[in-house]
Image (cartoon, rainbow, N blue to C red; front, side, top):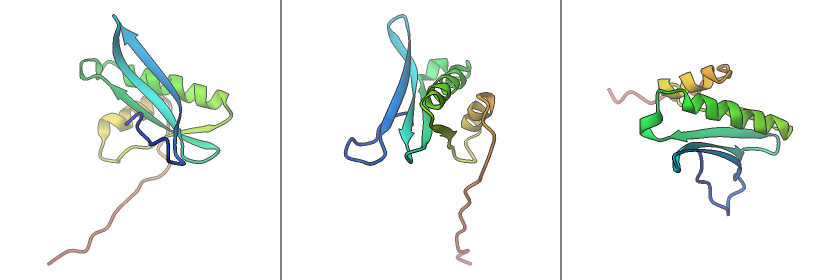
Length: 107
């Protein structure tokens, strides 16, 4: 979720942070330019390092770097993704909105 937008898209990864341990990538965080002023944070961590607060540290670091560039960082995640919500909250983010979807009952 951290990177992957096409270079042909208006929405691009503008900044990335990568961490290594023993020449192996632990994970990365990136910020994409959702608008000129608001950059969305994404993070990916290798499975072995999950649950060790590595993602939280990545989000804190990349968020501070976004702020240094006078942009507004935000962290979006599915409401049902409890682990991702925990990362955001532990990194200092507060829930600001919830996206909901309604479907017609076929009965």
